[in-house]
Amino acid sequence: MVCRDNAEYTREATDWIADFKKETGLDVDWEDPETISGEMFATHHDIVQYPTLCVMRDDSKMLAKWAGKLPQFEEVTYIMRDA
Image (tube, rainbow, N blue to C red; front, side, top):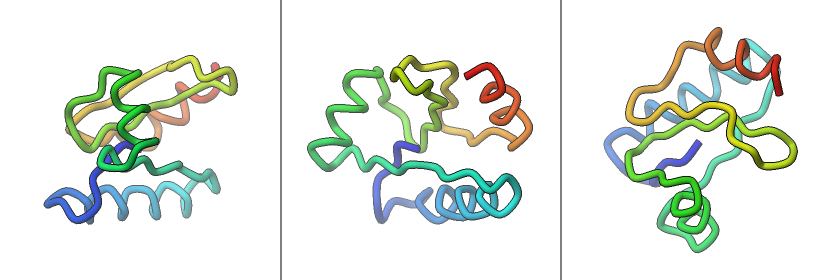
């Protein structure tokens, strides 16, 4: 998840992450684009809208990206099966 801390959508993103963890048992990494590592990640993956959720393979290849609107859990887990 790429999301700024203390933005109007931060609460929605943190709630989504908590609910996703509760339902699936899977963790979601958080990148703040206002940090150096978050800015590098966002720039490298052409992320300019927040929140953005990315599904990445272990080799860092992006499988899917949702920008601005968070997806349904089923959409994410379906994509993750191919990871």
